[in-house]
Length: 42
Image (cartoon, helix red, strand yellow):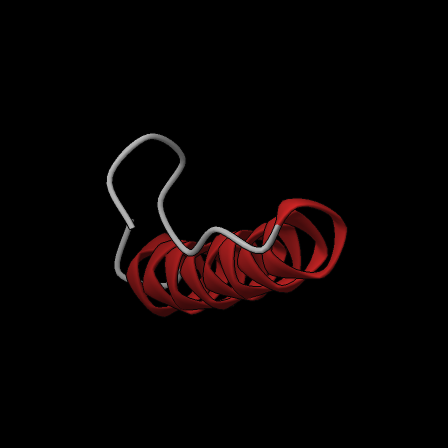
């Protein structure tokens, strides 16, 4: 049981980083195509 804990947190951090990069990519594409940072607000 002790062996599985670090692997879980490492996978969680990797997944969190990947999701953040996908969000930044979506923000850049949205700004490039439509000129809005947040659609409908800015």
